[in-house]
Length: 246
Image (cartoon, rainbow, N blue to C red; front, top):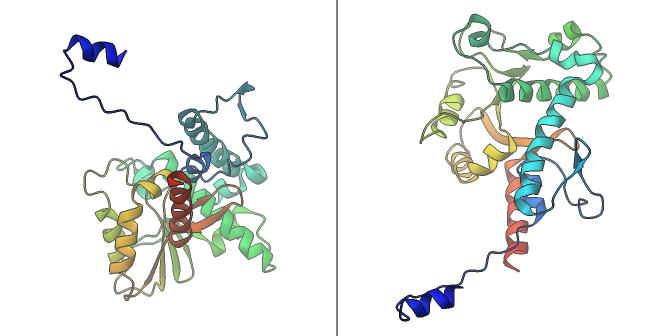
């Protein structure tokens, strides 16, 4: 068809043929925290409808699965971890609504830390027992951490709707713990946002590496219900890049 158009244009067009590289499904999995490597062997369905296995379809499916997994976590143990997780004060007071994503990641973190404490022999079977060890949105003055365990805090950052310089929000979150007794600040982001800001996170990590409190960046592993570090995500991205370029 392009050749016919070019002939009608008296060969005056420079036609450049581009061939897109095939993207591995693991990349879609990295944007959602879900392992999709077995999709070729085990067909995935959503609401009993088979999923088309082009990359864009797999990507869209992985995003749906991301929300489904978070919903499942929120409802674990008859919603125990939801009952133990506070919403932010802005949401409660009607001043600054908390997004569903932000709250659900907090519940994910509370569940993760509760399971870690249980492995140490600490019985955490009620919301109050969990709240005795894991604080969410508690404090009478600034800063009020999203999640706190002793001198370690977890801050959830989604960065959606923060404008062109959204990554500055992370700088501001880190700096609010200057001159406090907090020893470690863990910034936790959803998987897609984490990948979108991967370069920004690496730069922030570099510039804040020698200061206190200690800073680390994580995203979600919804298979193991744990966190994945910036270092590990960078390695996974490098591996996928090699696969795409091969």
